Image 1 (tube, one colour):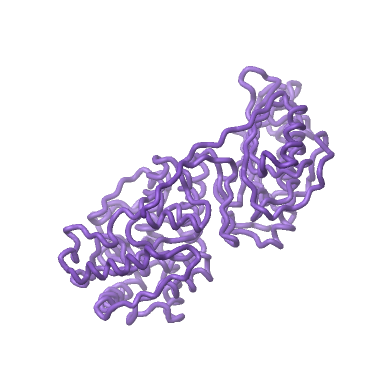
Image 2 (tube, rainbow, N blue to C red):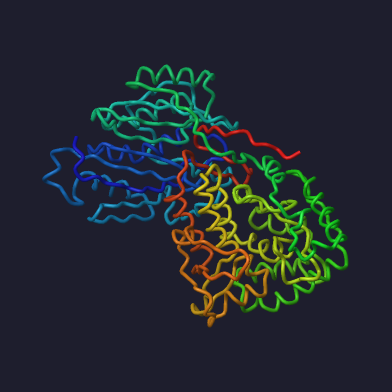
Length: 565
């Protein structure tokens, strides 16, 4: 076999790794064998295959390089060659496919036998849907282990372990290796292969799987691998920064506030107001006592606090019809109709949660003060938004140096009820889990220029801008500044995450640069592509919104986290 023309295919397989808990192992094996068997049928070996769930349960992405036979090298150098025939056959059951002579790129989205079905990559399935749609039609390729314990679905969440296998580099070898795991009822969560740099007859396959090393199935699996593989070793867990694995872990994050809350800086409007400072301490203490799973406590706001809210409400709601995006205005109208929002009372977080959770599953969680960018974004992975409950000082109702209940409830909360925006926010959160400091800095800039200061094109007039960022929607000055078509002090650029992730920003002045997206869906989709291509971690995560469960594709080692007592 020679590596003449390599076909690099990005194949989005719908249905792989989409189970809430560990699923029937044959599902993942069948999905892996799907490209393997198609190419093997044409005598084309898979030179390299890797599968990693980059963001959520859908989509999982395969990267495939195909080696074709030496005898085909001269005679078929175009799309008529065997790898491309295999590729076209492979694409026959998918919803979309494109091939080009230059680079021979094939992109496929699996339809799972349902013509026209287009699942959103951030939507989870119900258990009934998963049972039917989670399988592929190809079955398990022959040639591997065919005997072993009977396969059955597991509902228990298992730990993840890693193993590195050296096998022969030939047609069908990856299928056979995957079939061994299936035969012993062991579910593969991630698989990557690469050629041996010194021996063309061998390749190394790194596999992560669900199960305990000491279990009977794993013991039998190891014995079988020992006879099948040239060599195999137990993989070490990857070292990554600590991140929450469940909503209960957010209790640790909530105790790590940086500032604000009870402590005020000397330039804060309420610094010299003893009564205001005491009131802030009371509200911050309520947030400190909140724990995951409990209902958010009621804050009995004072008449002065309510008057501050009413003053800001009146000014901002006059601007929203023309300067806020349509999606925001629609949700705000729903909140008002439900009597959750209004000018005469400050909304209670518990009531806001009831409304938003029914729409997208997002909830607000009280926090005493500011959090680090990593901690704050980590919570978004669980569709949880850390929210303050205190209000700005009455002497400066249109200004606050830190997030307060006006910023949270008028700026952030409404759009969390929009599915596209909720997905966008959760994508940022999932990308932040275990990310490097450099990637956290990039994600923080993306958050700033979208969730805080994002703009959309007006659907009726592309020359008009509408705000969706909370920093704009909660500040009359910022709102006017960002949407004024004749503002010579503002540069508006097209939303490209690659650019926004590198753009610095001020925090004490009006923004000199902002980014505008065509729609919230466009912003979400481009963010997903950026994360898949630019945020690199030694593991992948997927989240089941129905059970609020986070699944990690490989074994990871996290340092202990200190708690503030």
